[in-house]
Length: 162
Image (cartoon, rainbow, N blue to C red):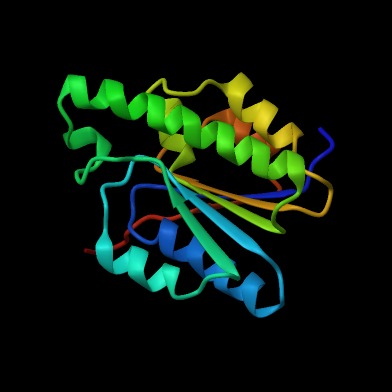
């Protein structure tokens, strides 16, 4: 696979998105352009407003329309959201193909696999669009062996005490 560096933050603990956002801020502080695409998350106004203040260095795109997280939606609402998230995946692929950013954070993309919204072939096709100098960051709860193999760095986030 001819692509940039892939980092993955996964696990049942809190902090995966925070770690990815930290990497985004770090890259932006070095003059790199960053795009964040969030999947499967309900709208979190406090997080969105903070990230929007970091534009134009960091741009946030969310493809979920509902206020609630995906797992809290009714089957009909989930159906509608699946189309939105597939559009988000297409957008991410286009971003990589056109070289629009130096760092692309795909927050909760691993959940797209878990819910059957995307398959491994979709994720592989996305990664194949990246240039050698693009950094890609995935987050999610469960990591499949294939993505673990494709990744350059994998971080498991778990709570030792809550």
